[in-house]
Length: 194
Image (cartoon, rainbow, N blue to C red; front, side, top):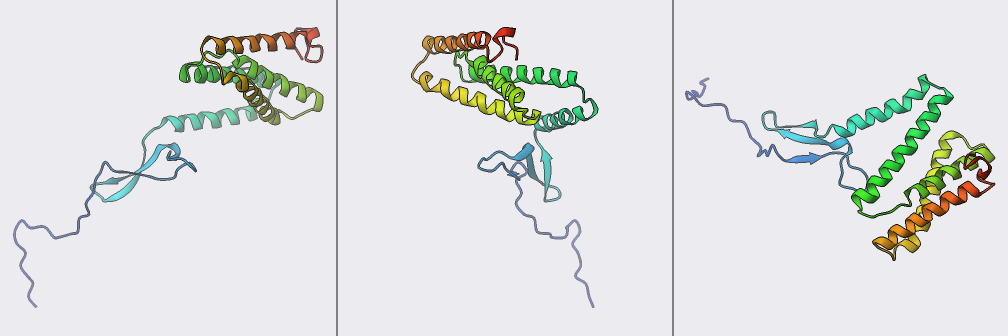
């Protein structure tokens, strides 16, 4: 039994697959989009020739952890004062996001943001006081009523642009403010407080 002599300086032959280490294979995606969940991507490692999961963008992970902490926080602090402050913070955050999207991203001078938020808030508050709707359902009702108000505003506003669009939305916002403060049904006796 004779072995074939090995040449000096020669390595054993192994098959090498063509690997492009910069090529990214996206994993799970949101349905109907090309966006991957949490920016997880599988990249080929040129040394091991295996696909490894890499978190390319850590911002969504921090937002997810923060949202989970906000959802678990009321379990430890279940007081009326906390829920009141949390509700006010959520209202101001929603108004801020709406202003950023409408004026900053879209470039529209719309002043009806407060009218849509007000209709959602007053509608949800009124239905909660009248029909004793639970707190989590109030969020859904407020969002639906605010979206319905935004759709109603968009019907005449689609044909306007520039200064006329700004005047329409400003007039609507003032109309809603006067309607709420003068209506006896919505708390006109108490200057708009339910």
